[in-house]
Length: 184
Length: 203
Image (cartoon, rainbow over all chains, first blue to last red; front, side):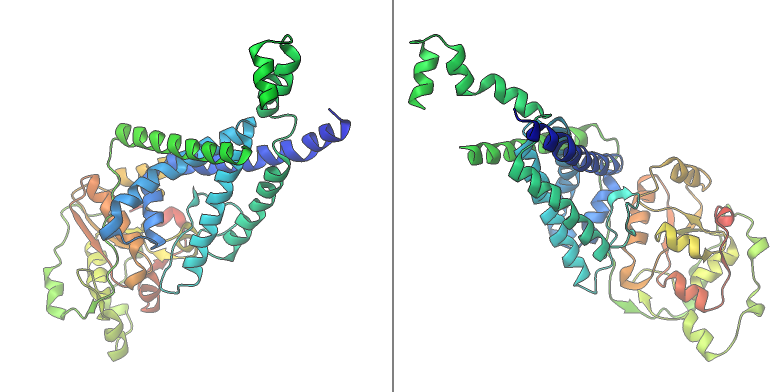
């Protein structure tokens, strides 16, 4: 492994994974600790009619924070890094769309509740600040999708132990493993 | 191949999140509720209805910040403010003020920053977001479940916060809950007692 890849991992990929994953773990924790308030927050966005689709709002209130938590933990560990990054990216895109829906509909007056009742850099009321914050978080998402989790990720360790190339090197000539690897 | 693995991974994460959410819902003591949505229909309330407002059995002592009706500005404009139209089932400003005089507990369910900038005198700060925190539990312990409670926020059709707070308080056994149909701004604009001091908030 080249020194350049080590430098990139230590200076870019590892800090990005920790920061992005940490933000999502924190956001998930604040929501999990008060699911009721998060359900009210989803209702306040008025994307779904609570009279007709209340069950979906409650399902989302229980599921979304746990998806955030699992994706955040996987990203910090560097395990399933691309899948976790895509999940976080999709959630950010969804959050941005929901925020724009509130911003452009003057009849909706919703609180973000992005980090529970804690204001992280922005006011509680939905506004452009939250949109900009989410767009900024898409930058490391894009980078990690492009470059992967880096050397300091469990994925690297896993791939090193499991790649066909290594399997070929480890396997004796003529063994089934080597044959399968050559066939692709 | 990598793309398929990534998609499978995303689905696995969402699936695990769903399973964890289901498990969470099974171990949670109180069910998650959505309560009612704010109604946009407004009906002026006749003055006679004020007589239906009963004095609470258990009253805090609001005398330090209390103002006598005689000190309030009088006139047609003032009366119009007090009887301004409110959504169905909510209190007019006049009714809410009468309950404040009678010693009802007031709960502010707006944002913390809005509460800090000014709130109805003696109003406690309690929202769906703070209700399960130590501060929220302390505020709830200071309000007896059978006390008369008035909840307010921004008023009108932007008053989901009051409805949400009311729905949770009902879960905790509070029985005499009302919502002020107009918001804090209307209360303050009418010259009714307000406070900036957060410490004064708890009745």
